[in-house]
Length: 186
Image (cartoon, rainbow, N blue to C red):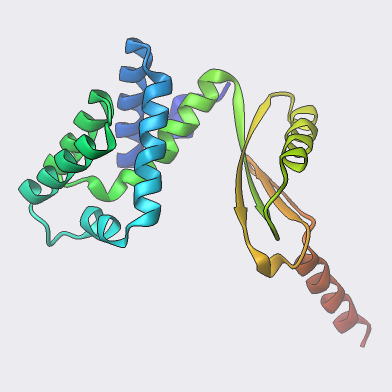
């Protein structure tokens, strides 16, 4: 297993490690993971929330009040709520996306999972997702959790990143390779 120092670094990493340890000690890994997924969904869906966590214009008090209100509305547990409030107090909310990624990586490592970032030209069916996960598990030797995004500019195929390895089977990449080969010939 990778050491937690290699999974997380910097300010976000320190907060992620602390939150992970609190969750692990209290047996709340699943709750913390679910809460962070809720926060990530809110960040993805709200430009105002992204602006609030990133802007130095908002005071500590304003950020803290916003976090309290959001935590209540989203029914976040005390571990995530208190971490976000501490980050607001220390003017570190701008690293929330890094915190979420760091905690997810630590939880996956603790479970013996590897996360694969998959970019597909169109949404994958359940059968395709399962087949890809099984293939990657056979290749990597560990359970693989897929993080799938859709990018229609790929035209077709997939781009899969597992750790430092990347496999690009997209039609866009194949066309680019063909274009390079044709340049060399002419």
